[in-house]
Image 1 (cartoon, rainbow, N blue to C red):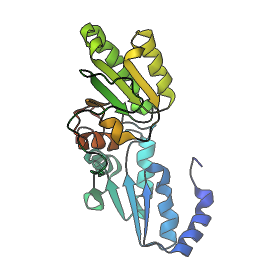
Image 2: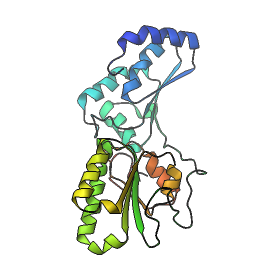
Image 3: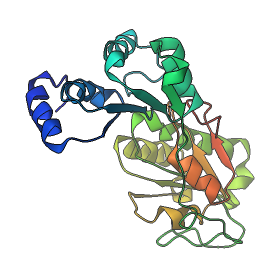
Amino acid sequence: SPGHALRIYPRLFRLFRTLRPAIVHTRNLGALELVVPAWAAGVPVRIHGEHGRDVGDLDGSNKKYQWVRRIYRPFVTHYIALSRDLEHYLLSKVGISKGSILQIYNGVDAERFQPTENRQAIEGCPFRESGLWIVGTVGRMQTVKDQTTLARAFIRALVMAPELKETLRLVMIGDGPLKEQAQVLLQQAGVSDLAWMPGERNDVPAILRGLDCFVLPSLAEGISNTILEAMATGLPVVATDVGGNGEL
């Protein structure tokens, strides 16, 4: 459950003593405290991975979160940062030594995500005629992903260049609280028929092959898997310059 897990330390200690793992690998702030019972149980290697920003700390300026990471620093054998931005955070804000950090980017399954010569029709998508230019995004529709900014940008583009109504289309894949907000924005602007928002899908490789451009308007990112997947598909990417986006 959320919050500090002191009360389950004895259970974790017994579990680690039973399993005798060679490595315990924690991920992000929410799991960092597990390095203590792992250390106490004699686990020789405790690796901690920083994969992205915390919802309450989009730019890494939260002093409390910095201090929490410093408190647990003696119990971590080695750190892995997914981006140079996160590596810099650990070095400059938390005070981890450079020799204790390895920066490794995520990888992409290049068999599932690969370019296609021509844009392919997306199953269920109404935008099938030739001559269209389809802009899209994929991801959970939460505040940190900020898809409403993309909806506003789409509306603004059509205001600035009304002739784009003939060719420009918007596809937003995902579910969450921002879905309804984006739908309302598009409806109020009278352009909801130019956008398709089917909710969550499990055929992301096929969806990306049905786009002309991928957009990620996030407020914060570690390393975006969707940017990597879009690039592997051969798509041009427009993204906010946050976290590791610019590095990719």
